[in-house]
Length: 72
Image (tube, rainbow, N blue to C red; front, side, top):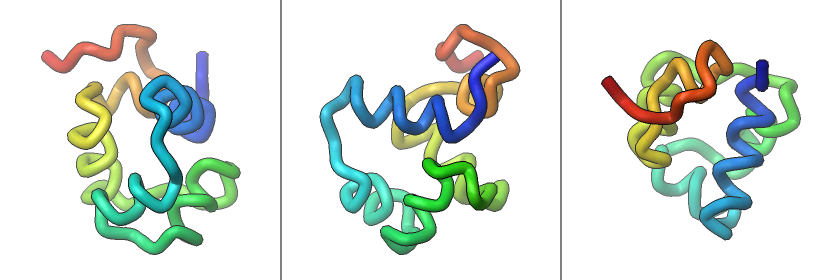
C-alpha cells in the first residue's frame, strides 16, 4: 500500500499543481508541505482533513488504507 507522501506526490502530479499552491490552499508553509511529501513529517489531523478536501479524496486513501479514492 502507498504511504501518505507517495499519495501526495501522485495526486499533485495528476493535477499538475505546484507544492506552493497546495500549501497555500491547506494553510501550511511550503516547507511544511515539502516535509509531508518527503516523508519527514506527518500532518496534523486538521491538515490531513484539509488535504483530503483539497484533493477530493478520502483520508483513508491519502494514508494508504485503501486504493479507492472516493469519499464515503
